[in-house]
Length: 274
Image (cartoon, rainbow, N blue to C red; front, side):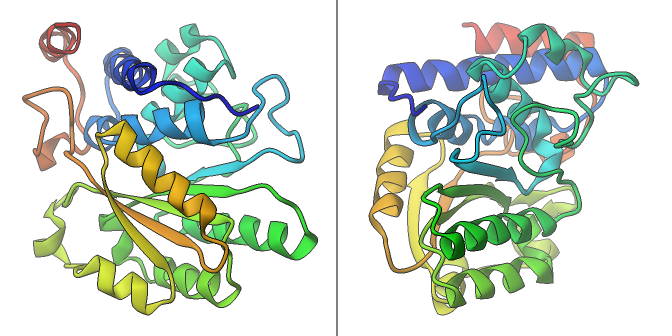
C-alpha cells in the first residue's frame, strides 16, 4: 500500500523519526547519531509517500524493496519502520539490547520490514542491485530503493554495483546518496575523496539528480522523476547535514558514533520539540 502524505505530514514524520532516534540511542547508551539524523527526510518520503509496502504482510511478493546500505544508521531505519506500523514503537527503547531484535545493524531475520541485513559497507547496494535485476528479469513490477553513504563510496564494491546496474538497465532501481561529506575519520573529501560524484556516476551510465536531502518536496520531485525514467537506474545526490536537527551534533564527525548522555538527551529533546 502506497501512502501519499502531504509535505506537512512528511515533515512531521521526519521530526518524529529524529525524536525516536535520539530516544533510542539514549536508551542504548551507544550507536550512530550523526548519520541516522541526516536521513530522516529520506526515510519519511520513502515510507510515507513513495514506496508500495504493506506492514501487515512484510514479505508480500509485490512489495517495493528498501536496503539501507549504510547499515550503521539503523536507529533511523527502525524509527521509520515503527512509525509505518511494522512493530510497536516501544521496541525502539530496546535498541542494541542483548535480547532485542533491534541490533546495531539491521537483521532481516529478526526485524519485520527489513529486506537485507547490512553493515559491511558496499554490500547493501550490491544486494539491492541484485533485487532489481531479479525483478527486471522475471517481469516483476516492484521497485528497489537504497540509501548509500558518501564515505561508503570509497568501497570498490559500490562501483561494481553501479556498473552492473547500468549494464543491465535497471530502471527500477533508485539510489539516494546521503551526501553530508563526513565519515568516522573526518571529511570525505580529505579522507579519500569520491568527488566529483555526479560526473563519475553519470560516466557509469546512470541518470543523476540532485536534491536537498532535508526538503521533502525536493525529494518527492526527485523520486517522481526517477519513477518516470525507463532507461537507466537513477542516482539522487541528496545534500545533507550530519546530525541534522540537533545543533551540537550538526557537521561534527565526532557524532558519527558516540553515546547520547543524559545531558545530551535533555538538550537534544528541547531543541527537537521547540
